[in-house]
Length: 261
Length: 323
Image (spheres, rainbow over the protein chains, first blue to last red):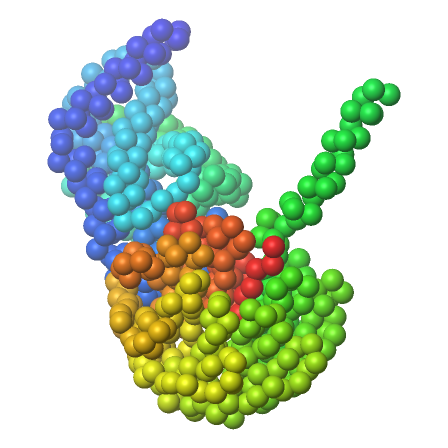
């Protein structure tokens, strides 16, 4: 494989993902509406009832909207990661996967291209969300929009690698909806996306430890710190480690011919 | 040689300039710890914690910032601290349970409200002599002297009145009824307008000093906060007459009011049970004491946002900034 071939292949996958994204406007809207509903409706109820106590990386008390914004950015990435793996299962069932696999390039590279393409598409949605969030006074420092970019890319890769790994384990499209419910919701709710971990610990130690071993918690914290121009080294190591693990699992477990038919 | 010659005037200039560049310090009275915390406003760190009398509440500086007066409520005295040595050099006969006080522009006469005795005590800070004791309403609390020095004002929490005292005769000249539990009073710089907060009433009355009549009443409404929790306490006005800040107690917000149109512009989220406030020297920052959360929030006035909260002692009550 040479660089030109690699680039050509990556471009192809990226354009395909981009076209799919552009053609499905409802997908873009729903990806935005979901977190915005959380931000505007759910968070409004909590807004002033509790100023979130000072926790890192914040220097002072913050509104609930400000607290959940990083978690909602990760929610967008989570849904997109899962959606992309859903499309893998769909492609496999419809046979369009074969077109991609006809490429002479190594399979792991193709999967990596797919992951990166998904991540890049997701980023546009995250930034659109962050700009809309400005209207409800979620105002990270200006430089934060830049410093959060690498964190978002890594988290997007983590979640799309998780999605790919799941898609390797699913035989039929019908099974996928169930897995989504068992993966997306627990991952999101049992993390620091909606409540700080100390609040979880107040409720129950069990909940706290489940949140602690949930990689999504560390992904959210990585984004939260990066958005406020700080590096959370622990979160970075865990997120990078789990990304590597799921990528390896996805690549080794990938069997395009595996369907329920 | 030439180089050192050149350096000398620069070094001298730096040395001369250094007192000007000295950091601003905020002094915070911690009601439950019997201490004063000192915050360096450049680093936003507590640099010192000084032990003082029991239950320190109201604090203020002498005009030249050489002394700090402290209402040590449970010690029934006003302590005077030398800010160079950080030692208590004098205790003034304040009457029982002093809570809030105000210094006359003459830099000598201290007007102290004695909560338990329904009195205002006037003390000469140089001779420690009690000049007068004036009967006011039940549970006197807020205290202010007009910048022109002509009038002193006290609020009584239970009688719900603002009491007007002539500072030359030391006599009560009038009362103005305000909403329930008036806590704090603040004069505008031109001495023409008085702002009085009512904690239970949830309002701030704006009073014309000449007629001693209320001409405007502010009500506060914060989205998602029950009206019962909106309890105005501290009030602070900027010298340029642009803004008034009202600390809303358990609502955990500071209201920003346009001091000309009396329109409420914004609510800024700070710590729990925000009590009193002070501005830094160039009036770009507002500091708030947050009693229950035990910290001081710093609001950037140009952004109208809290930018930092600094942990101090238990139940911080009053704050004053020394340049």
